[in-house]
Length: 351
Image (cartoon, rainbow, N blue to C red; front, side, top):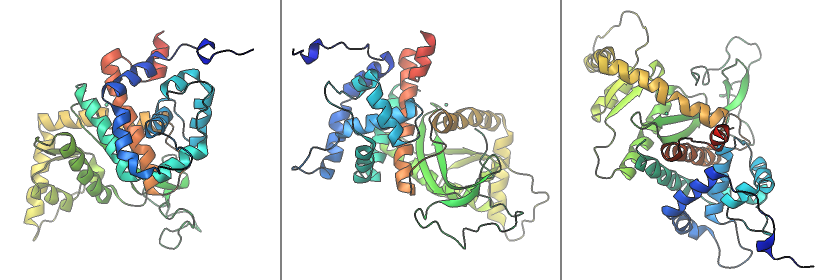
């Protein structure tokens, strides 16, 4: 007996993913990524994983809180609702984890950044928010027979560094850093850097990348104007450099006691101006807003989003996952604006 595919029973599609697919279709997402990724696909041989389906699989990793590509593949194979989101029809099978992994290696980091910028623009169009990581880049100096990043490098992942985690344990780690728009709560950029680098050092790359993303989204805008940060980002040199490029700083100042400013007039002026700004009403409001808008994405991406622990090697591979994860967060802001919830589980809790 033969049964037509259209006659097979179908489960109801998840309303969250259905609405998200409508938004992506309205903005021609699949055509956009097809054009971006065309150079990575050959005209002959076995057909590869379509770019639109690949990036949707990574979005599933964020929305479902999955930390490994194998888990993403299993979840996609197990759910009819996710098959609808991936535009899979019976008897077509979802890709396995090795296909996802190979596609990630095939598509370069710049393309992932372009897709992340696409998601930022969607979040901006909607009109649209963790614990401190101060110990992450500090080596345990009291324990005997400690390892040193100066003396040892992981043979299979040179980018991983020995670092002390939040709970006091020591692991091989990478340092993820975000820049967030305080007006909308959207993530502007994500960088992945060495875990043993200090915040002042890593903030340079993050601010440069954030300025480039802002320029890409708002080519006719004023660009990066103000920076709000906690005390880990405070240093004489960083404040002088920010003033040199015309960026106003609101960075909390640690208690360093009485300062000595001999032959450091530029640094003294920059530090005093920053101190005056953070003590004013606007500075206090921005610092409170930073605690709300900047720390929240870390919980969404690394706790409920499942990226606290990753099964990838190298900064580029981790940043590829991180960028699309952050893109999923920005799409969640858009969905919250449209339907009142930002994740499928949030919608399920209301039904």
